[in-house]
Length: 238
Image (cartoon, rainbow, N blue to C red; front, top):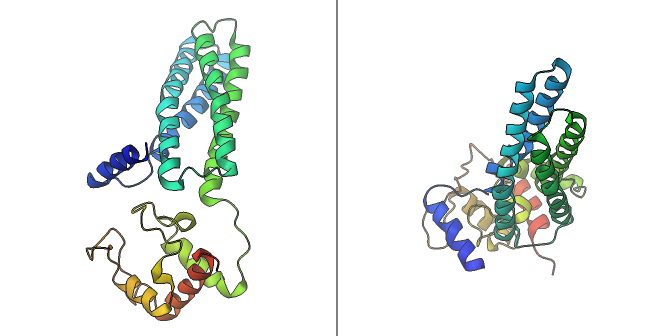
């Protein structure tokens, strides 16, 4: 299974796409129930059956996008998080499982919504709450609360958030998974860290996706602040 996933993601990387797939499709099953909900409100208030039909179509599309979104969520979880059972992952799995029957019921009710718009509004509301919670916990994985950082590391934390966090989320590496920041040999001393930061290369010596950071982008004092934060945050304990 892992070999097949690696082959799939490596193929995408060769084609120029190296980011998680789940984020690229998750907007659809989140936005579409919201669209359907507000369209249904318009249909109820102004008695527009054509708008109710459009709301139904949006909800059908949400159900269709549910399946690739869940699939890519699972594959991204295995690829970028090593299948780790984070608390947010457990909650997202439970919410996604609960959302599916809600979407199915909404689609079935929407086929003949005349006289059932109250029930349909309730189902749409549940779907909106469900996708909202899924979005919240998805964001919490990426941007969630972190332990307080010591005062002497706060400057480095800001530099990391601005320059590094997008690719090195939680000490990983979403571009080159096999070269995580966590425990990297380049964190052992400031000289090696600075040299790599100025001229980053792959393990074979070739130029990778990481851009260089010359002194006009990060000064030597800033590099030291960044190194202090990264080393103390992402070095494994003794």
